[in-house]
Image (cartoon, rainbow, N blue to C red; front, side, top):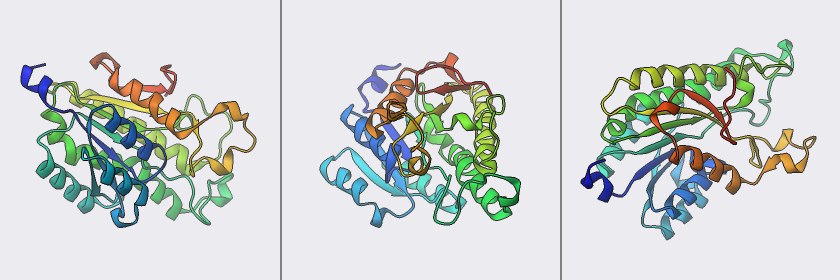
Length: 253
């Protein structure tokens, strides 16, 4: 790393930063001394994220709707105006359930609308973020691009079935991440790409499905975020293309 890069404050971009793991990552990365740009679909309604930005001069908020390609493109343009490069980019936004849209337990519950939306949020969105933010990542020496995946996206580990849209969209996200790792390994400098499984974290996404779990198996949001940040900050080029659980262990595809 050049002396100029060593002196420059590192920059992290967190996609999906208004709540849950994304919000905790913004808070923790800022405390670690990074400049942090947090994105969300509606900044005006992101009270907790705005509160952090109001307290911390190193935190900025950008609008990004992950299901809208024009919104992703505008967010990348805004970030380019704010900073010359991005060192860490984390996709945290995900869709499992909302209102009447619940995970499909059986084939009879599958709808094209829900499958399509799952893919837009969980797979296509992160891939388009990679496309539009590639230039900013390319300017960093040793940039890390990480997407929050899930163990249920593993085809080899699937023992129970169900959750058609979520499982399939996370499996697709994993393939996109692996493809990116291969393509970006040829760049100079290369970009490290990771698929990360956070475990069961006490967020709105997991809340309806955590009741039958041992409470000791559920991580507080701050711990869940910290475990993933440790993996990201410690990542090396040889880790690129891995599907990694919160404890650093590999998950089968």
